[in-house]
Structures are given as C-alpha cells and as structure tokens.
Length: 152
Image 1 (tube, one colour):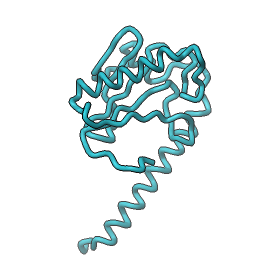
Image 2 (cartoon, helix red, strand yellow; image 1 turned 180 degrees about the horizontal axis):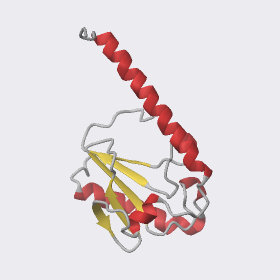
Image 3 (cartoon, helix red, strand yellow; image 1 turned 90 degrees about the vertical axis):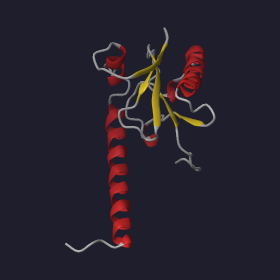
Image 4 (cartoon, helix red, strand yellow; image 1 turned 60 degrees about the vertical axis):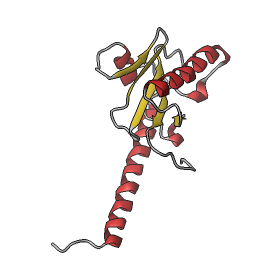
C-alpha cells in the first residue's frame, strides 16, 4: 500500500474526530434519558468501592479520582459523595451552595497535589448539549499542558 500524503492523513484525522464527536453526542443523548431516574451511576459505584479507582483526594463530602480516559496529562474528576438531586449543574438549588463550594475547593486541592496549581482548568458539562454522559454532578480538573482558547 502506498504511503499516505499529509493531506490524506489530515482528512483521516478530521473524519476520525467527527466520528468520535458524534459518538460522544449520541452517548450524552442516551444518558440524558435516565438522568433523573435515581438509578446508581458509575460514580455511585466508585464511591461505594464496587468499581476501583485511583483516588487523588477524599474527605467526608467529596471524592476525586483519575479519569480513565484522560484528555490531558492530569485529568481528575471531583464528585460529591451524596448526589442529592445534583445530576447536573442546571439542577443546583440554594441548598447545594455548600457542596458546590466544597467541590471547587477540592479542585484547588487536587491541582496542588498534582503540581498544576500554576495553571489548570475546571470543566463542568451540564446536560446533553454539553456532552454530559454521567448524570452525577462532576468537575473535570485538567492540566499538565498548555490549555487552548476557546475551549469548546
């Protein structure tokens, strides 16, 4: 088979990216159907230790663990241990103020522990249009490389 030229390789990469994006969007739409069913999420199973994870930080209210599909050299998920109706940020209520603040503070602690305090990004996907695929509020702490702008 002949070697691919750079324009053919670029086209293949672009098509692969489009396919991956379509898969993520489809997964997000499918996950949204059962978002508020109350069924345990993969994160509930990580909290209960049914599913193993690499824990980076934990306290009585928050758990932070490495993402199994990292999008940066450092990619840690920060979640509340008690979902309490927080399937996505759009469902936040006044009563959630404390846990929302604790999640952000935990993100800062994770950044310190991971050595990225000089530059990191915190991302929250909220709803199917943002490609949220697990309906248990979670923050992505990303770093370890130069972040680009705009992000989306």
